[in-house]
Amino acid sequence: MIRVLIADDQGMVRSGFSILLNAQPDIQVVGEAIDGEEAVARAAELRPDVVLMDVRMPVMDGLAATRAVTAAEDPPKVLVLTTFDLDDYVYEALRAGASGFLLKDASAGELSDAVRVVARGEALLAPTVTRRLIAEFARMGAPRGPDGRRVEALTERESEVLGLVARGMSNAEIAAELVLAEQTVKTHVGRILMKLDLRDRTQAVVYAYETGLVRPGG
Image 1 (tube, helix red, strand yellow):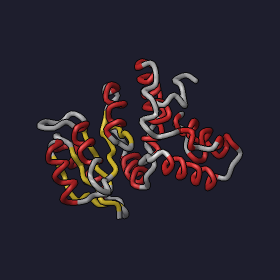
Image 2 (tube, rainbow, N blue to C red):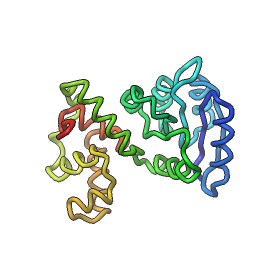
Image 3 (tube, rainbow, N blue to C red):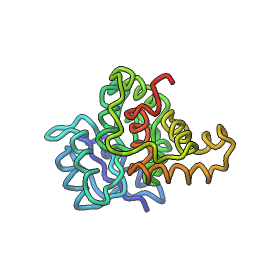
Image 4 (cartoon, rainbow, N blue to C red):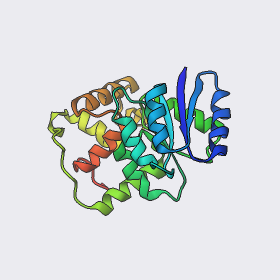
């Protein structure tokens, strides 16, 4: 059972998502929060697997709350609730530790699938979000540097896989591109995360661009 906490200052959003998620046999909504501060407290109290986090909330916004939630020991995954007009938040939310993004007008199927994806430790980066992220790195200019983690620790194949992950490709797509078994790609991704001390694929995407391993448009 995947335990979910919903953080949103709009009661209708919380109620709607709760109804949709509780209708799934493998998902249970264990709590709600009306602002970022309460989200942090409830996450510590309830220990959910996934937090649905709105960005624009009073008291503490979703970015600060995401940063606090993911800094905890054995933290839950955070799925940021967004709309198309929140482009400026994409990069900062990833930097704060979010595992992906979900549009507020998502269907019941998209919502439940998104929760399952991030609960498995995978990134949820739709192509539109990946394009915005790449555009943000292009706007920022030069890479920030490897932050103490050495990309040289990766094998040539692992670097190749990381580059494809950074372009938003799934394991299945990478397997087809490199003519590998999907399980082999999954093993490579696991080793990449371990070697670079990264939590998930989303962090791997940010890392690849920040270190210059992948260049926007490259």
